[in-house]
Length: 376
Ligand SMILES: [Zn+2]
Image 1 (cartoon, helix red, strand yellow):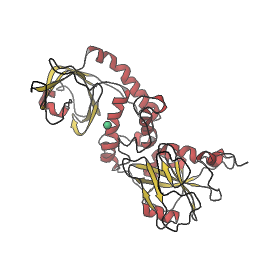
Image 2: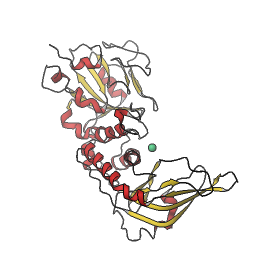
Image 3: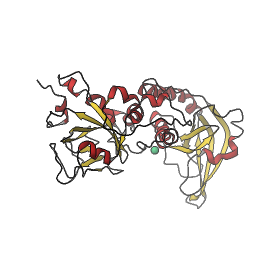
Image 4: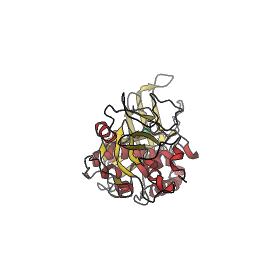
């Protein structure tokens, strides 16, 4: 973590009441520096737990005492390490390339002398395209878990995943699309979302080969109607399972006119079976915020799965964090120890879903919970 004692950002486009350019002042105080290790440990413990021990984060500290000056334009008012340019040469003269993977620059928004106080008290930016000393960078106004992990996950999901794995899965600001709210489970600012990101959207084996820069070229198999055991593929599911196109899914389900509606910015996935489709599961034509019935629509905020029961099978489209539970449906029903097979995954909009096949002979129950009710 890089603590900047005194940063002055002058933006000629933002003026005070007297028409003078506002100088935005940021500071890392002794108190910020003293308090940071506890927050860093919280971050490291959270990442270690959510990645099941695959990812260990170690922190190192650099304090920049010099005053740093930065010019900004437009709406820019925030510390941007790249804009500091040569001013960083001296503080980092003793640092080698690749010494760390990521640099978190920290300074708190302070009151500018003779100017209006800044309204911003907590903010961050991930500078996903800029490398410095072989590291990516981010800026935060505090070392809190939610700020740090939010900006770090921007790198993971919006930049590093694309650069190293050639995959765009679910962009970081898709929390609403994926059904998460700000204070889920009583945690602050989307921390439940971040937990599931680390745990299910970036599964264990991806963390084990994780790097900020090396390309992995992990092979991805084509779709071939083959069932997989979830236990064999779950730790690297986006690579060990085939990704299905809508055309593949039409073939798998036997629904020739199938379409999938999952627009970005909306928290739903609606499977449209097409006119005349042979469907023995409930069907809706549109989905609203309160929708929670078992059918061809998945409301990501209130449900875990959509269902299409067709002549080729009883197909479920399950959110990544619930697949562990769904594949054990028959075990929980007291019918069989054998888990349900999975067939691949689908990515429409920014919402990935795992395709699970439920027992062909099981009628679609009245609600999701009934999938797990005893058959006795
Ligand atoms: Zn963000």
